[in-house]
Amino acid sequence: MSIILSLVITFTIAVAGQTVPGRAFDRLITIWLGHEDFNSSVNNAVINNLSSQGILLDQYYSLTHPSQPNYVGSIGGDYFGLDHDNFTRIPRNVSTIVDLLDTKNIDWRGYFEDSPGPGYMGPENVRSDGKTDYVRKHNPFVQYDSINFNGTRLSRLLSFRDFDHELKANSLPQYIHISPNVLNDGHETTSLFALNWTDSFLGPLLKNTELMNRTLILLTYDESKTPEQPNRVTSLLLGGAIPENLRNTTDSTLYTHYSIISTVENNWDLPCLGRYDVGANVFELVASQTNYSNKPSPNLSLVNNSLSYHGFLNSDPAKHLPMPPPNLNLTGAGGQGVVKVVMDFWKNTAKNDTPYDGSGRLFDGGDGTNNQQAPQYQAHDSNIRGLKTGAAAKFNNKKSLAARKNILNSEGMCFWVIFGLSTGLTAIFSFTV
Image (cartoon, helix red, strand yellow):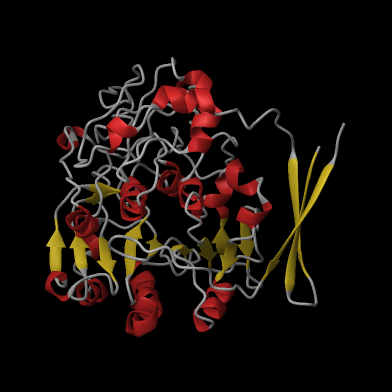
């Protein structure tokens, strides 16, 4: 048995790094509310007021039910058949949007209201009055071992106290995920309660001209409330990145939570994950500035998005499948191929069938009996979609595979111990057995 002890020390007072300019925005903030139908929320006074300052996305769909798989898919490009809110861990060889951001050192963090400390991995946090506030299921990052086996990454999962401090210090990162607690997001209260919180939280931010400079905000819901209806949710684009002529307008392009990843790829010219991030439409606000062509889904009218398809994380043993390999021949919205870390982890699966084809098709679990919209597995093939550059032709997959080495030799059990020091530092120890 070997024990590897590593110490990572990070300042709780963040130092603003160098900004990596984007093509349409320099900062993206995603704010997540909980389970509400489109028709029940879109006409609320708070939504009406906010939409007058931005763009209403009236064809934005969540991925499935319940909440957790939507968070998982929003950073990983798939929810892998997940159909529950229970404790979940996704193997270390599955990459996320973090791996894409890291290729250009784009600073990122997740802020979770009432999280008890940096990198907290517990299932929930309960207040002194007995009410639950923070829940793990609304934290997409901590589900992935590629993040929670990495002390530097884990230390970027913070609380609203940290957000407030970094806002005052003008040191907020360029990619931000925000999850309010389950009271303020509406899960344990009401839609009206959540929208009143949204108004109080977003109002001051939108008036902060320094923060809003080239900042894009996505306000969305994790899922709809009525499973029997298509999983359509109210979503808005806000912030200083919205030009005056597009404010108080509606965008009827089809989007899902995967569009968060594709938009990030497109804005910063990043590689892709080789999963459902490829083929997901880029927010038209951005696509119109980057000369990217969105396309309608070929099967939207048939999709319900209410039941999870078979997969690695499905709780039904009869619906369990091995973890699907990414398609190593895809080119993403950033005009690049699959990110190197994915190529390294999955290079030996290049001949295995994959469900990812870059077509933009939507998939679900059907009605529980008839599963016509299940993912279809096929050989790795390249995609020609949406790109107006010759980037796909420049990506030589065979040479890339030959030149890369597998960086994972063994798996172990990793534990993280995080504590605060009186000096104002946070110490994070990791040891692998």
